[in-house]
Image (cartoon, rainbow, N blue to C red; front, side, top):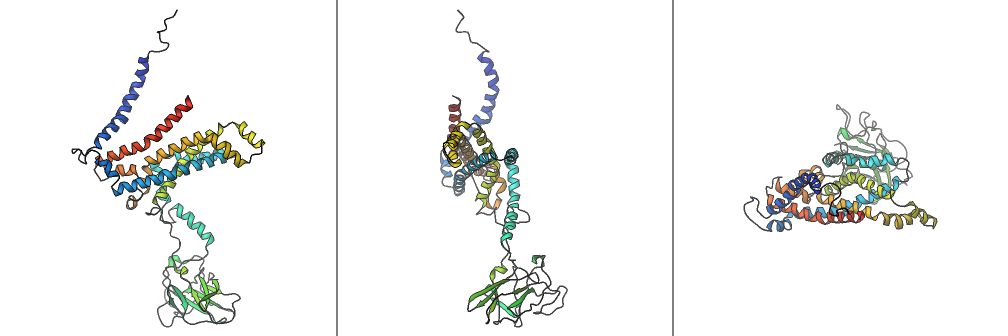
Length: 432
């Protein structure tokens, strides 16, 4: 009978021979830094004075770290849920379109870009000037489709007795009431040449029986002309909203054409005050302050979603491919709608994959650093702060307090560990 104690295959020493280099590197790059950080977190900024758990207490009393904790909570609540949801939507939709491969390639492409490069890209995307930032350029283009009014910030009537109009609060109104058949002149000055629309035509005096008039830039290039009178060298102001007001109520509204003329149609006889409301003199859309203190955190979360949505889509699409088609077809034969099939069959069968994606995104949001560091300008970095960034700032970004920085690193490790353990247990369960 063969010796049962004899081991088949290579000796375990050979396995240890191959595993040992990896274990040594893990010890140098992972175990030693963790142990050293734990010890360093128990000392003050100089590293000489033992302070015990004081650095850990500072995490929950320091204003800067409290903001970082609040922002990390926002990240954990919003980003994983949105990324997982978008990944699920993309994965389901790409099963039903012909160009699914091209779509998946486009959505997954940001994963090929480093987070540093993604941060640089979105720093440019979020520029406030619509001529530079793509986000505000899109918004200004869309808003321009639904708004025909042209803003003329700084426009005002001449401040003299001969001007037929004057400022009344924030509006420009005729000094005297006017009647239909009596042309209304609304000369304005204080307009910068660069904000004049390209379609502005030479100003023209309005004619006709109804209540009409002209709104124009009462300035002749090179000099000449007469104040308060329409001159052919002067430009009309198109897109100005004009109101006919009677007894404090707006009776009719009109808009000026390229030559600055306007006309109220079907206006009853009577005396009216012609008014240019304040909205005509407000600045046009100058872009949302994406990099300002109010929107900086949502803006960075948007960049994170752009990067990771493709990753979630690919994993969920792989899970969808593994779902037995028999179960789906049986439900459809039984009369289930597509929504019922999706909600009661697809989602439950996909739940393990969805959970893996969701937990992975939580880990990534807890560790987020690159995007916040690159996208947030220095003036608002305090408002966009997260734990990983605060750890760097405290330790190496000018704080020079590696005791508190080490405490933040260990605190971040404690936050991440439960989710890592959850993923490892699930992987082991699936393999068993």
